[in-house]
Length: 68
Image (cartoon, rainbow, N blue to C red; front, side, top):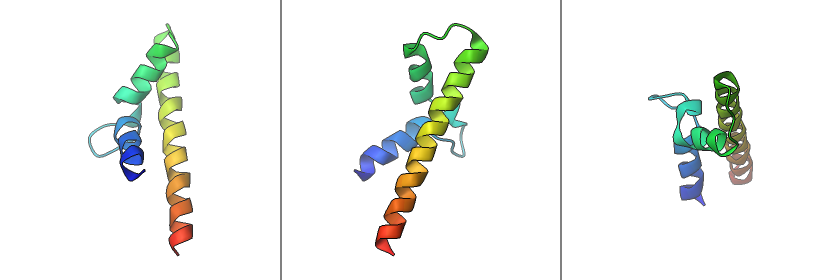
């Protein structure tokens, strides 16, 4: 499970090298939905990145609560 969560984090979330919305996950998500307008495309990429980041934050918080 940890490997899967790490893969999501690497492909969708901000890190020291780049913002999450420019990574492969959000880019492919937006391309799959065939969003034509560049502003809408970037907005969709940011939404996808934000959703995954929020999900991972909630999962991390849940595991911390269980281990405490």
